[in-house]
Image (cartoon, rainbow, N blue to C red):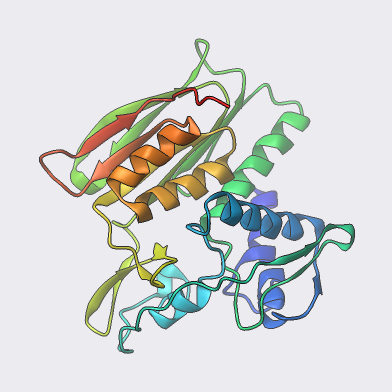
Length: 273
């Protein structure tokens, strides 16, 4: 718990004293960070490269323009005009591993978002194993990380619960070790200029993604990677999400906005090298 709270203090975008806020204020200049915050930003750039920009951690200004400028608990509908579409920043984040420093592109701000939550879950699991735990199961903001010996049997079992559609246990996921992350457009919704918005931003438009998926649950060896792929899958839509999971050899559950064809389970596939 203390580790999670410490990471929250370092990474929250809502505290001007956090390391992420300092890096954002210094965009355009080299900023020396703690090793753990450098690792977060490094992973985010890695995820951006791996998804050809579909995952972009530099979309914070778009969220703020849409009215998501405070913590979710205090967020209310925004009276500002709904912003015009604009493509995501194309500049890369410069990384300086030898001094744990980064240079964010000038005029951009970094959003730790779900990848921060995923990395926190991975770090907690590792810390517990190092402390002598034999079986680890963590729930962090709706995501699950498991490691070590399963409670019973040879695999961990994670049961999904789709309360948004009033369906309990539409699918179950079995895994030996890794993370299970869900990204959804159903929960974090508000209105901006009379238009309904959500927090999953399409890098191509800079606006909430227009998608035929309500949510995606992805399974990966690490929780941070499951977070990235779940988010990208929702943004891309059902057909592209199915192909993405299959190409990566990942399992997952797609939840459509079509009440007549709601659930699609993608089983893990071996992809040729």
